[in-house]
Length: 274
Image (cartoon, rainbow, N blue to C red):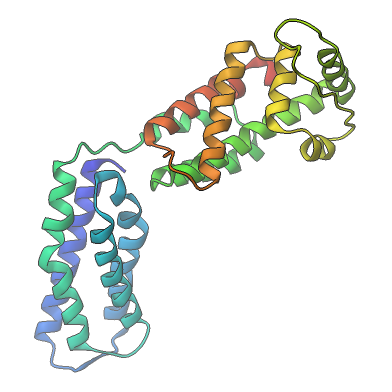
């Protein structure tokens, strides 16, 4: 969603709330039971939680402001799930409309609006298999709403799946042989690698060979070169940063870089074609 689309979305939400507020001011009933009105309230709350709230952080909206409106729309949703006083609806809607433009809309309009471009990220699907596409579509969905950590974990899952399936295609016996050869090296780049493997199935490969070790075998096997190995290792480090608590953020720039590297080095690489 672009900055302009977010602004439009918030303006539409504001318009819907004002329309609802006018209706409540004019109607004479004390309790809201009309299904059409309740559905309208729920649609407004859904729009907030699904389309707007997840992307506020990208525009520098503070945690305090996010919590303020999260609480408002949560209250609105809870009211719609039971028979509620009209005046309670009015109080909450009045609270939202009082400052939403200053608290959120103005901040977004003044921001740089750096939202990850899905037009760029979706290119990773070009050479993905059907099974990989499931992971990648979830990764893209997370990126759309600013969940960059989750997106990084999912895109790596798709990549490591492609790598493991390539090993299966080329033969586990050859993989084992390469690891044993590398372990025997006493000089050069691979002299510190002290592991060898004896796997005979995809499940064994997944269960016993760490991703970092797998990348070393791939380089020795000449499926990737040293530079590609280093770039993939950086992506894997970001995946680990994303999956565990810590202070290192995953930004839109980090994610875009990772998607580009993983697409070029793995999914578009003829050596990993399935």
